[in-house]
Image 1 (tube, one colour):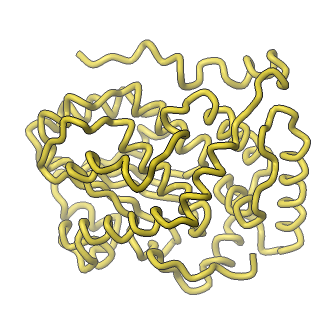
Image 2 (cartoon, rainbow, N blue to C red):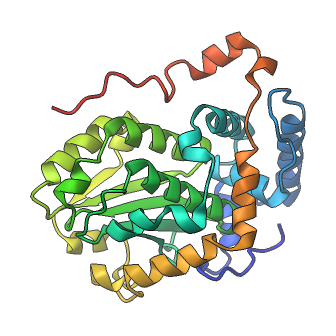
Image 3 (cartoon, one colour):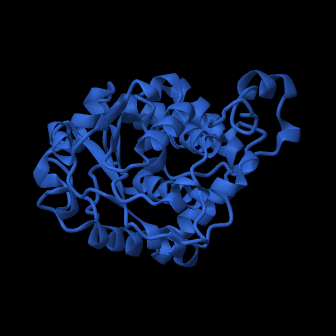
Length: 312
């Protein structure tokens, strides 16, 4: 990759490409090319991968989001293909242009156009205060995955911060929260898509917030739990994310959440991106071609067997 290509919904800092590369030991471009070659060669030799052809820019970003570690990239990529087979409810059968209507009735979710000064990207979700009986929590995470796949094609950053604004949450939505679903989805997003989480921010202000916080604490891994930041007011968010980067809904200078959500949705609904998502649905595994002992070592206790989580 010689440069970050212009993107209709994302802005980039000056020299962001080289700054991010340098953070992960890729100031030497020859080393980066060698690592991409090695990663690509490893994928081609895995008998259980159903798909083996991937764009080099995609593989470069995957290495970057794996902190420049080829071994970590291999492990995460194997999980991505494996989870595509094991968790089709998250990773298969997308109908991007039609399936998210119930989600958008209750929630706006967008990428902030401007990255942070240290090259992190912010993803924000706010509740509209409406209910939709057709909404399912899995739909929300499916949309986050669609955005994540878009970022793997177009962004180039150190990682991500998630912001959840719960002030307008309704009882109908609270009832749909499920720690098992949240745990599985975040495991997939972090461990398979490689979306490195700097912080997860939750804005309180709802009478249901204690319940929301309980669900999240049960769902988060120990590492992510340490990165959870609770804000008693929107203003405290400004200590972490520049106010001018935030949408009007959160007191910032950016366009509204609704405008940003519509802009992002238009982008992920293009023929080009839909084709990318459909191709990624084929990046699954044929487990009959993998050593069962190795599978058990790597995936024992992974999503699909979470039966101990509960909400009182």
